[in-house]
Amino acid sequence: MTLGVVAEPLFQKGLAEYQARDFDAAKQTLSQAVDSDPNDSESRHVLALCLGALGELTEAVVHLSLVTSAQPQNAEAWTNCGSLLRDLGRFEEARSCQEKAIGIDPENGTAWNNMGTVLFDMGLKDQGTLAFEASIKVKPDYGAAYANLSLAKYEAGKVGEARQLARTAIALDPGLAESHNRLSFCLSAAGDVEGSLAAMKSASKAEPTSLAHSSNLMLRALSSDKVDAYGVRDYAEAWGRLRESRAARESWTPSVRKSKPSKDKPVIGFVSGDFHRHPVGYFVTPLMENIDKEVTLVCYSSCLATDDVTARIKNTVFAYHEIHKAPAEQVCDQIEADQVDVLIDLSGHTANNRLDVFGLRPAGHQVTWLGYSATTGLPQMDSIVLDPILAPEGHEDRYTESVLRLPGTFLCYEPPDFDPVGPEAGGPVTFGVFNNPSKYSDSCYRTWSEVLKSCPGSRLVIKYHRMDDSWVKNHILGRFEDEGLSPDRIEFWPFVKSEDNLETISRIHVALDTFPYTGATTTLDCLGAGVPVITLEGDRYAARMSASLLTACGLESYVTETKDEYVETALRLADERSRGKALSQDLRARFLESRICDPERFAKEFLATVLS
Image (tube, rainbow, N blue to C red):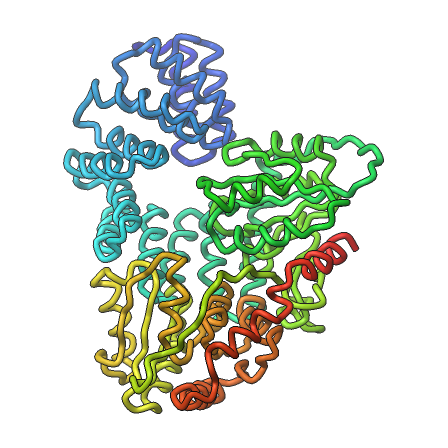
C-alpha cells in the first residue's frame, strides 16, 4: 500500500529507531504514524515488534492481528504474530499462525524456525527438529535455525552434533547470543568448565540486557576454580544491577499491597520450578510432611512436569497454585490473597525460576533456600538459609542477603531402602565420579589424575547423563590425557534409573567429589549406598555442601582442605575399603542415624529459623 503524507516520514523515522533498538522512541513515533493513518499496516507491523521487544505482548498481538486481517497473504506478519502468541503461552494459536505463514510461503525459513520453537514448547520435539531442519534447508545461512537445531540435538543426547551446529551458528551470526549459549551447554556437558564459561560470557556480551544469559553466567562461574567467592558475589550483583535497570526502564514496580488481617496461623509460601522428581522435590517433601500443623503451607509451582512427588506435595500443603505462565503481578495478587508471611524461593537462577515475582516483593519476608547454591543478587531477597558449615561466621560478606543459619545441616533427606553389598572382592580399586560434568574444573582433572597415578592398577568410573555420546567421552578422556593419565584407566558407566542408582554406586570403593562446586544429591546417594566421599572444602556455599553433609554424619575425616590432603585421604580410604576395614553397612547405618535423615527434627529447626 502507499503510505499517507504524514505516515511515511513517521514510518521511516520509527523504523530507524527500531533498527537502532531504541524501542521506546520507536513505539512513540510509530504510534503517531498509526494514529495519523489507521490503515498504515507497515507502521502497525513494526509498532507491534516494538511492543513485543518491550514486553507488551498482548497489545502487540492486537496490532499484528489487525495487520493479518488487512493483509491475509503477509507471511511475515503471520509468523511474527505466532512468535508473540508463543511468548504468551498460547501455543495452539501460535502453531496455527506459523502454519498459515508456511502455507503462504513454503520457502520462509523464519516461519519454519518459529514453527520448530512452538512445537518444542508443545512437547512435540521430533516434529520441532524436522521444522528446524526444514528452515536450514530453505535458508542455509540462517544462524538462529542452527542454534535451535543445536538445542534439539543436545536434548536428544547428541552433544557432539549439537556442538558443531552451535559453532556453525556462531560462524554465520557471531552476534547471535543463543548460539554462544548453546555452545556453552555443550561444553558444560563435556566437562569443560572454562570453555563453557567463556562461551556464556560471549552470549552475555552479545545480548547484555538478557537476564537469562546473566543467570547462566552465574551458574557457570560456580564451577570455575578461577572465580573465588567474591567473584561469585560480583556476578550476582551485576545481575541485580541489570535487573534493577530493566525494572526502572520497564516499570516493574509492585502494586500497593493491602494490609493483611490478623490470623492465627503463619503462612509460608514456597516457589519452585522443581516440585517433581528432582533433588529439590525430594528434599522439600519430607520437610513439608513434618512441618507443624499450626503453620499453613502454600506452593506456587512453575513446574513443567508432574509426577508422584508432585502428588505428595499437593496432598500435604493447604493450596497449590500453577504459575508457570502467569504474569508476575498476577502471582503477586495470589500471594497477597493467600496472606503469605514468609515467601521462600527454591530455584534461584536455575530453570523455571520466578525471581521476577520476588522482585515485586509480594511478601514481607523473602527467603532463598536450597535450589541454587549461591547468593541471588536480588535486592528484594531478604535472607538466605544456610548452616554453620556452608557459611561460617565471617562469611556474611559473600552474600547479598542476610544469612540465616540452621543449627544443623541445610537439608533433610528420605533415603530409599537399600542393603549395600560393597565392591567386588579382589577386584581393582575403583574410584567413582557421579557429579554433573559441568562441575569438572581444571583442578578436578589434575587431582583425580594424581589419585589414580598414585594408586597403581586402580580405575575411575564416571557416570552421568549423555556419557554415551562419543564426543563427550573423547573430550573428557582428552582432558585426563593432558594430565598424563592413560585413557584405559577410565570407564564410563551408563546412566540408570534413580531406583537402581544406589546399587550401581555401591560397586565402587571411594567416590571423588567435584570442586569448587561440590555435590549434594550425589553425596547423599553415595552415603546411602555405603560409599565414602572425599571432598575439598572451599570458600563458597557451592564449595561446602558435601562438607556440611559429611560433618552432619560425623565424617569430618573425609573433608579435606588442600589438594594434597584430598589425594592422601582418597588413597587411605581406598586401602581401607579394599581390605574390608570400612564396611558399607556401617557407613550407611551412620548416615541413617544422622540428623540429615531426621525430617521431624529438621522441620522444627527450619520453622524456627525462617520465622525468627
